[in-house]
Length: 168
Image (cartoon, rainbow, N blue to C red; front, side):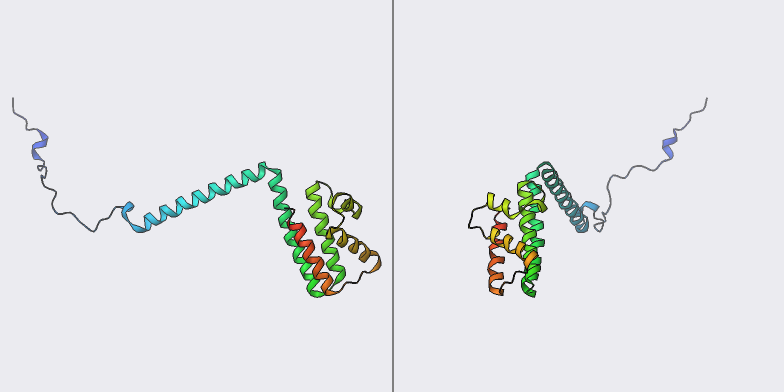
């Protein structure tokens, strides 16, 4: 019988030293752009989580929804009030004031905004409220053509804004 050499005898021996290392090779996690990208992704995930929690909180709380709607609608009406004041258009000014009052108290009292009348305001608000005065002036303007000076319009606008902003 013949002696068979093992097949591993023909292989080169293992190197015992690693030789020179290439210092130019930097692992991916060690590169600045990769680290910055990781931080941006982390910040994006945190922001998305915060927005999701906030929207879930808003959806579960009708009081917060109503307050947010009141602020949004009031901001729209205040621009209309200011536009009517700037143009000196008494009718547009009083109409915007009336709509602002109706919409704010409609949301607050959980009723249809268009159904709110000056009688409702007189029953629920203090007698010296500027909102009652403005609402009655708006009613008179619709039916009789109320005329107001620019100073009176400015005074009424300031009073309406102050009282309605205090609601939300």
